[in-house]
Amino acid sequence: MLVNIHTAALNGLDAVPILLELNLSKGHDFFMVGLPDNAVRESRTRVMSALENSGYPSDMACETTVNFAPADIRKEGSGYDLPLAVALLVAHRFAQNDRLDTMMFVGELGLDGSLRPVRGMLPIAIEARRMGITDLIVPAANVREAAVVNQVRVYGADNLRQVADWLNGADTLQPTVIDTRANFYAAQAQHTCDFADVKGQQKVKRAFEIAAAGGHNLILIGSPGCGKSMMAKRLPSILPPLTLAESLETTRIHSVAGKVENGGTLIAQRPFRSPHHTISDVALIGGGNTLQPGEISLAHNGVLFLDELPEFSRSALETMRQPLEDRQITISRTRYTCTLPCSFMLVASMNPCPCGYYGHPTRQCVCSPGQRLRYMNKISGPLMDRIDLQVEVAPVSIEEMASNQPEEPSAAIRERVVRAREIQAERYRTSPGIHCNAQMTSALIREHAVMDDAGRQRLQTAMERLNLSARAYDRILRVARTIADLDGSTTIQAQHLAEAIGYRNLDRADWAG
Image 1 (cartoon, one colour):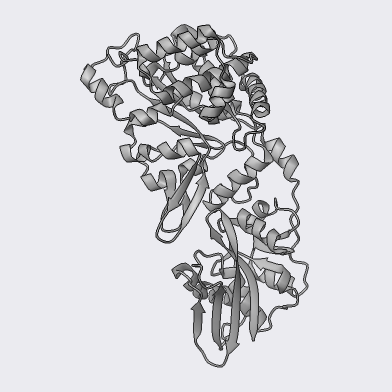
Image 2 (tube, rainbow, N blue to C red; image 1 turned 45 degrees about the vertical axis):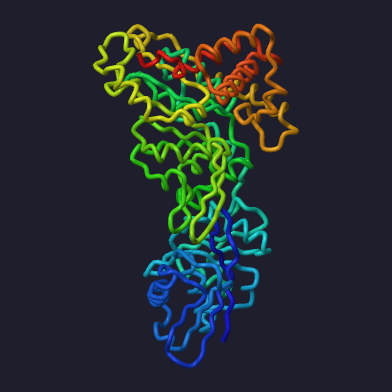
C-alpha cells in the first residue's frame, strides 16, 4: 500500500515542500531514501516507540520503504517524525486517508507519543498556504507561531493519539485563530526599559535620539560605570514601532533559528541582541553545517549591541564591514549558499584605555600614550569609519544622581524620532530599499544633503584639520541631514554640521594623547 504525506523542509529562510512516500510490501526490512540525515534516520526508533506508547500494535511487520521527495534535497532535523507516524497509521489502516491531499504534518515525537516543537514553523506555514494546503497539523507549542498565516487552518496537537483520532473523525483538535493585528499592536507598547530612568547624560541622550531618527550606528566611549550599557538597552524604546511587514520578516529569521518562544507569535518589538565578546565569527555572521542565522541577522530591524568592542576578536569585527554597508550577508558553504538580511543599528561601547580611566575627572589613568594607542588600534579604521556617531560618556555627578527632577521619558523622544522618520519616508518614497538617512547613497547625499555656504566652509575646515576619510565625509552629511530633519529644516545649516562634526570624537589626532 502506498501513502503520500505532505511536509516541508527549511532552505535558508524559506521552506520547500517535501512529499513523504511510504510503501508497504512483504518482508521485514525498513528502508529510508531521499537523503535523510542521522536525525531523520533515527526517527524510525522514536516513531515506533511513540506508536506503541500511544496504544497501537508494535508488530507492524511489513517491509517498509520511505522516500522523501525530491530526493536531491538533504532532509535534516526531527520534524519528519509526525508525518512518518501518520503515514504508518494510514498504511496499516489505523487512520483514514480521504483528506491527506490537503493536509500537511510537521512535528517531533517523544517516545511517549507527545509532540514537541520544531524550528522554522512560520516559513513552513507560509509555504503551506502557497501550496494550497487547507489544514496544517503542528505541535501545540508551535501553533500560535503558525496561526499568524491566514488562509490555512492550523491545528495544535499535544500527542500522536489526538492526531490519529482527529483523522478518524473525532473532535480532538480545533483550529487556532488569533487576532494578529490586535495582539501585535498591544504588545508594541510594552517596554521594560525607559530613558526616564537615566539621570543626566543629556548630550548622550541627544546622540541616541539622532541615531534612532536616522538609523545611524553609534559608539560610546567612557569609563566603567558611566551608564553606557544602561542607555544602549533603552534604545529600542525610542525607535519607531515595527510595521507588520518588518515583524513578519524578523519573526521568520528567529523562527528558522529556533528563537521564537513556545507559544509565541509575531515579534512585536525591535530585537536587541547583545552577544558576548568571546563570540565566534560563524556565530556572529551565521553559517555552520546546517544554516543558522548569526547575531547580525537576529538583530535585523533592531539593534546589535557590542559591549567592550576592543575585546572582540579582530576577525569577528572585520566580518561585519561588508554587512554594515550592504545590510545583507551572503553565506557560501560547500552544501549551500544563502543570503540573509541584516539591516540593524550597530551600537558599541568601549573604555577609553586598558585601565578604563583616561579622561576621567577624578581618577588617574595609569596607561601610557602607547598603550592607549594600541588599545584603540584593536578597532580598524575602516570599521570605525562605518560608525556615524562617536560619543564620549562622562561619569554622572553625585548631584545629578541625587536629583529628584524627572527625566524625559522614552515616549516623548520617540515622538520626535517618528516625526523625523516620516519626513525621511516621504523623501525616499521613490528610492527602493532606502528608508532612513543612514541608508543614503552618494547620489542621494548630493541630492538631499544640501548645505549653505557657511556650512560648506565649516565642513571643509573640519575635514582638513581632522584628516577625515571620504567615507567619514559622507557620514557627517548623513548625520547632519538627520539633525536638520529633527529641527524640521529642509536644508542643512552650519549649526547642524557643527553638531554632526562634534560626534566624530575619535577622529581627532590628539584624542588618545
